[in-house]
Length: 519
Image (tube, rainbow, N blue to C red; front, side):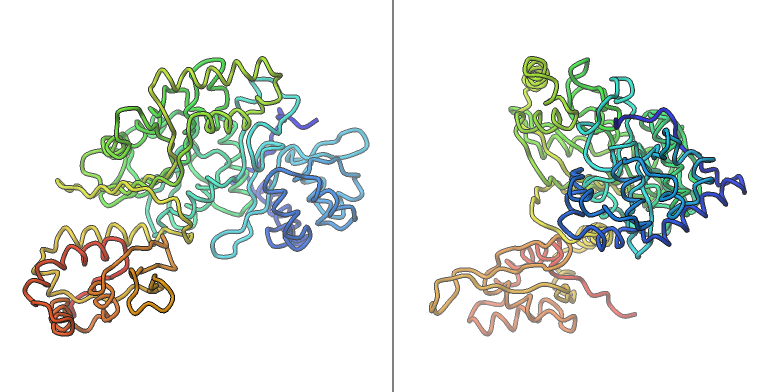
């Protein structure tokens, strides 16, 4: 029966013998092609995608053979017992038994944790460790575990984890903090570009699993600390803070906050608000804090303003709402995540009602999900952008985040006269679309569309389209406008007066890039 193992493996990178055993296990996984690419090749796209949804039947059908790779999939991903002979053909079994990756179960061997291959951003072969049955999805797939065990579950990599990893700024830094590390995926990414990584979690089991993820993936050890929010790090400061916190807005009490990995135990969206507000004190100048969050849409309040009020002084912010759910959809999602839909009709109804009662008491009509990025600028007039963008984007977006704040810096330091004297070039991947009736002489409107990054689209008039099309970094904006004015028969002075706002919008949204003056 799949549940929470009371035993976790050990992988001590400071112990030469333990480190050598972990290295031999890692080499065996590579030799068997127990990697993200190897899984895709073995299972095929449909079964591979099903496994990511925690649906195991297609993968079981695809692993009926006795190859080492099939053995590892059945052992570590499908939680099936394996005969010792088959295990020895795939693994250094004595090492795995010594460190607790597998245990004897009668005449077979079984895994104590999920080990899921994960492809790093530069083609690295990594492995993410999590509790059995928790490689993806939530606690709904767990059977046979009591409430105390379920509360300590450590999940593997899901969509939220990969989203955060994709938007994180990847530049060399001295110190990085992964707050609420879970299975250690963000700490693993940070280890690539941070000299020192600190990872915290309220759940001590998560810290042990993070250590396993880092060791098995060949990353350096992180400084692991137990505690809530910023409590474990005192007054220390960092160049990068990342957090995929327990952001679910659930009732406080027996019908709500029962799962440490998702329920923060605070009322409403207080945990996310406090995390944002406290982060400034733990950022070095120029440092970034990037996190995922849920927030309430409250009756009588504008959600944009509500989130702006969270931003601490001296920090620029870019907040993007990616999705909104009404309270019934939201409650159903997380009740299913916890497996409450299997609790029986009366118990499920009672828990569902408790969620709706909590939302009603807080005048919450919907819940938003998105990204929050802070940059500690120290500015007295910080840039705070709060927007809704539910459309597809191109990950990774770390460079796009840096570029966003660079554009804000440029616009805040550039008045209209300097803007018109400046030179711009059309950003890579921008195309023009003309929309109108077939055969019409003129389009109804022109759309500029990005094929990279945020993949924005914006309508522009004839002047805006012409201006953007000519921008190649050679001519000042004012001279381009003068030429357009002559072509369309408009007063150049009036055109110069009314166009800077449009140029600012195109720069702000990344359609145009300022070209630095040569010195």
